[in-house]
Length: 68
Image 1 (cartoon, rainbow, N blue to C red):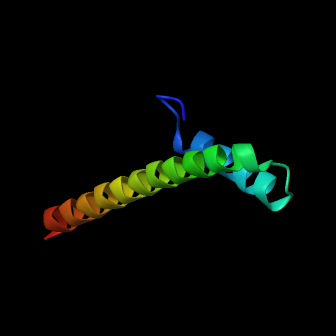
Image 2 (cartoon, rainbow, N blue to C red):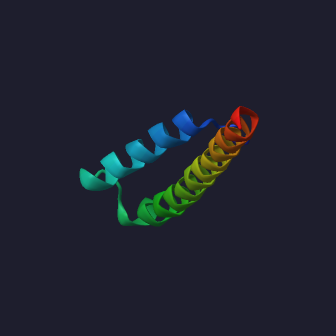
């Protein structure tokens, strides 16, 4: 995974890995490496989503406070 990878780039890479696994394109030697990369990508994407969700909730709460 690249240092400054975006969420979209990470998802595209993850989709490519899943596609390779589903189509049996990977040999047993590279399968483990690809699964490890997929795990890192999943964690990265999950963290990005949680962070975005928290930021959105915070903005909505701040918006409600200013309306009151």
